[in-house]
Image (cartoon, rainbow over all chains, first blue to last red; front, side, top):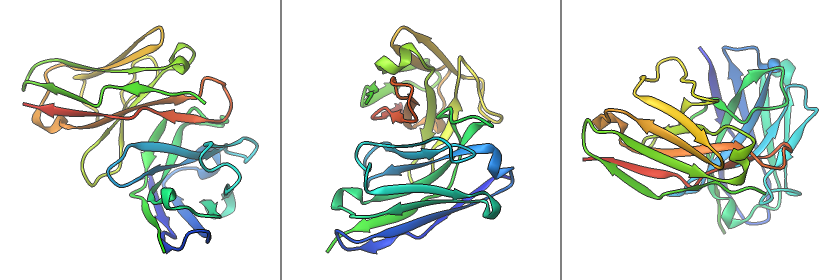
Length: 123
Length: 109
């Protein structure tokens, strides 16, 4: 059974940093691209960042470019999101999502999602 | 970056057919995927590619595409289909960027 478990969320002041983690199990993690998708309270889904299976291809939404860094450790079956210079508008539930196609850069089709970790940016 | 546009809300009578649409330039090059999200739950993939359903998704869900518009059709809507529906695709630039539509709230009457 595929499982994605996010952690690392919490309350943080504007301008500070936070690192999210996603622990994956139930599939061959290093075969698949992975993504972070967020959802602000009462709002829609927003793609945040994605990373290919071998970290060779990485992308960021304009809203987080230069502030967030995605990475993965295939040996630990884990995905990360380093979030710096956090702003109030980064407040959201952050989901880790698995891409559907193995050994590709990314198809942006998310067939499994975690339950999310809540990040609240407030003073 | 690309944008995908969805109607904010759609309603359908129980047992009837409803179509939810998604428009955007990226859909001329890439298929849309569709996700169902119920309150307090993570999104669930319901349609991807030309018209593919993941295991466990009822066959009343189908997808289609024409030009810059993708559609999700629910044939014989059930009460449990009431949810938010989101489309997404790769960005039209072809770079490693993704985009979601704003979502459609489906009400089953």
